[in-house]
Image (tube, rainbow, N blue to C red; front, side, top):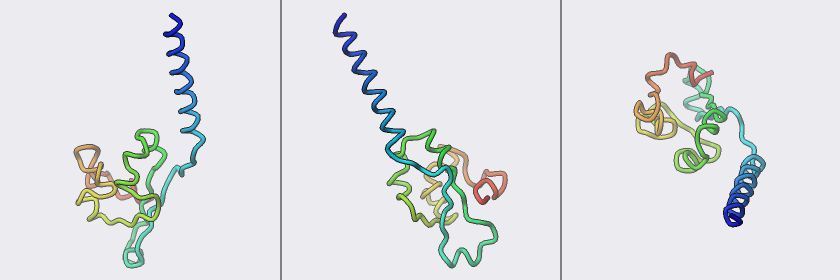
Length: 111
């Protein structure tokens, strides 16, 4: 019985300490606005895409996307990248999640 209590308390301490570290170790933005190259910025009619980082952070661990899909900051992408499975297209491919072409309008990303 004593060992069960010891294991339980150990588990609780590790869980609480890990949760505390997860909350206090870094701050992340709720939204990320993607940068554009000057060439794309000149031709674009819609604003740059805005990524709902907080929503994705609540659903996934950081290592799901960083650094394999997105590096930390400075990601420049195009719609062709999505079709090639890069950046957002790694998950928004119609299999894992909705495809970019299935969005009701451009304002889903370009706000």
